[in-house]
Image 1 (tube, rainbow, N blue to C red):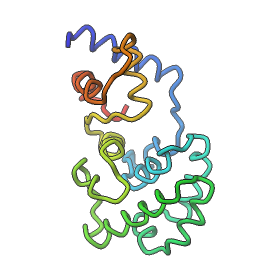
Image 2 (cartoon, rainbow, N blue to C red):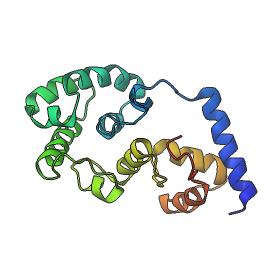
Image 3 (cartoon, rainbow, N blue to C red):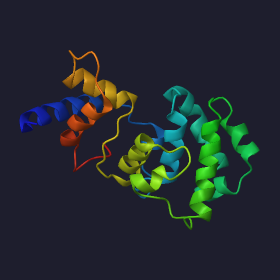
Image 4 (tube, helix red, strand yellow):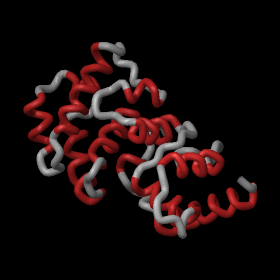
Length: 184
């Protein structure tokens, strides 16, 4: 892909984000020390699966107040997790999140996976969710194709195509990654 096309696309995305981006979503803000917490990002990514941001915005703080760490979630009872999750729907995601926390503590010695391969081994974490966690928590460039990303790439690169596969989007997304600022 031509460098000018890549630069044009990246500039378009950054301008849109600067003007209209949701800059104050709790799960996109750094910790006090400037780091990003992979556990909190995983919680948000599982909550955001098939759930609107406005609903997640209200439940996310409550969930983290009750289960502030992966350890706290791992030692909790599933019933308690489901009670706090109530209102988000798709309770299976809460069960997966609970199982993933237990797996991180019991099987991984409390070490949170920092690769797509490590994350997809967790219950409820698919390739796209893992890609989001790696990008947002660890600031690593990784291609993942979720609904919003798909929409942006189709609009910019495939406007006249009736059917676009994730593979086609991946092939275009790879050269357009920002390797210096992947989290953004």
